[in-house]
View (spheres, helix red, strand yellow):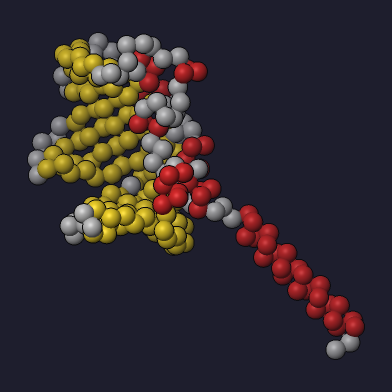
Length: 222
């Protein structure tokens, strides 16, 4: 091989290696993808729910900052229930929009200031995919689900001496789950599908209490 040809081959090889490294470095790792949802200015999704044969339907969820609105429409009787979390007063509201009545659950009797709010204060932060979860991930696959590139993460655990397997399909674009599966130790399989996912921000009005809402019951928590 002549020096000239060797020099050209060396340059081409270096170019291929550089291109490969740049391409891989620009791709987000699955750990980075899990953090993306934190940077979103809110998100919305639909998911089916079933608590019993009489409580089955569609759940719509709006999540923005430390506010969350959930609308659960029962497929059997057509009734809708609204669950509204308003962090600034430390309360959770269960609302019947038809009667404009609600039950309020207080988690604190002190009004919270914006600087007091953090993701660890209430479950509304929905940070399920935290460092503890990351450390328990046993398998990672890159797949295409519903025409979207995803990471499928698997987490194995034991219950009563039998293995349980949790799987989640995470959107590479938004860092949100598109599908979840839990294979229970007793053989049951629980699934949840998330559809019509939208990125915020949304109007603050949807997180506000209805005008002239009648509180029919108050429950205080420590």
